[in-house]
Amino acid sequence: MFKSKINVIVLAILVLLGINYASRYLFLRFDLTENNEFTLSKASKDILTNLDDAVEVTAYFSDDLPVDITKVREELENLLNEFSSIAKGKFSYKFIAPNKDAQKEEEATKEGIRPVMINVREKINPSNKKHF
Image (cartoon, rainbow, N blue to C red; front, top):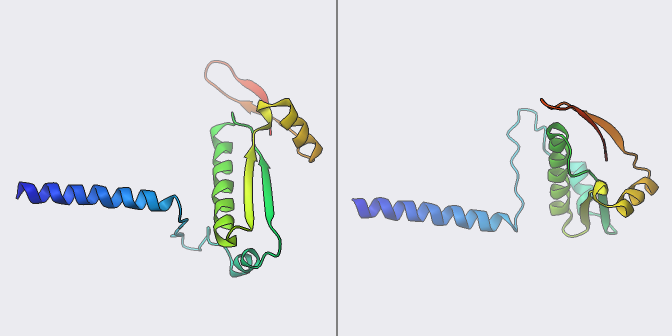
């Protein structure tokens, strides 16, 4: 009996490792919201599957953003990842942190991306920083 429990545990661990490994190469997302809030429309999927040319999106986000804005970045990255998966190699994206490099900041400004000042409230010292 003890040996069979160990076998079940080992098998469960192997299955989880296999799923984790496969998830690197296969993007799946299930929308369990009532209104399919996070599901792409058929029209969006059709556009992505029928792209004539490659499309690359560049997103400018500072690295040291407050948590609530970091969530927006993560949601955007999930959406772009789904676009990339559906477009089968014709859609790519990259994130650039302009606050780390003056040249990247200048590039963002040339693209029409303006920094915004964000007030960050911390217990000890509130701050006002420039972010992209």
